[in-house]
Length: 298
Image 1 (cartoon, rainbow, N blue to C red):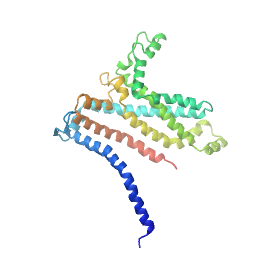
Image 2 (image 1 turned 135 degrees about the vertical axis):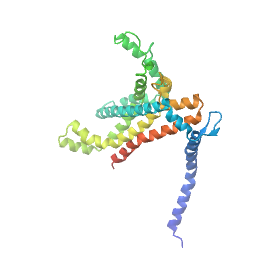
Image 3 (image 1 turned 90 degrees about the horizontal axis):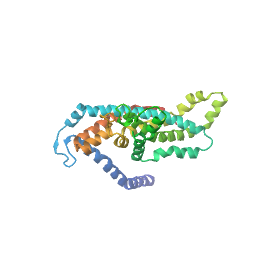
């Protein structure tokens, strides 16, 4: 005679598969199909109007690796992503610690901090373009009125400063996100630990270094991983602020792939660039993922 418990268990599992199958099928459609299409495109000569014209093997990948614009963009994007993610992590941690010390007005401050994050990326880019404009921009007006400069300067037109301005705009928009996640992590820390170290006579720096930082490290590594991926994906700010210029000085991979696929219509080459870009992102994020697992605590 069949065990009633096991029979009910099998029925529940079948029912679970039945209800979850639509979601699983949808997930396969929106993930596996685009990936297969991307790989197939990268191995073929494809344009936007005529995909899969002929099989070219690894020619697209070879051309991408020999393309100085693409490899330079990959290196520039990697440096940009790591630098902005670390800068925003440190700045966000400082803001979160300050917010934790506040006893009044926390809701108002949180709302103000959220405003850049709630701004659509394109609108944020437009705002920063107006701020940095040589003629009529707020920054140039301040510099001229204070006598720091005698004539307007075009920071977005400078090969040195253009990428820095993109990083500044990105930090303005995403640092609140980092700060709020860290702030939530700080609020979750057990208060009894801090009571114990205060009784032992530990100072603020000792408390932060030996108590707060180790306990908040899982949150820091998690937000660093998220912000790294977001920084690698940056597109809107580059598109509006600089369009990759001047002289490709701010050409990041997201905009370069967009230009290859949707302006030059070379879909096969853009697909190969995308896969190489994904490999680089994976290599950069693996150490952070490992660090996050090692710092996890129960």
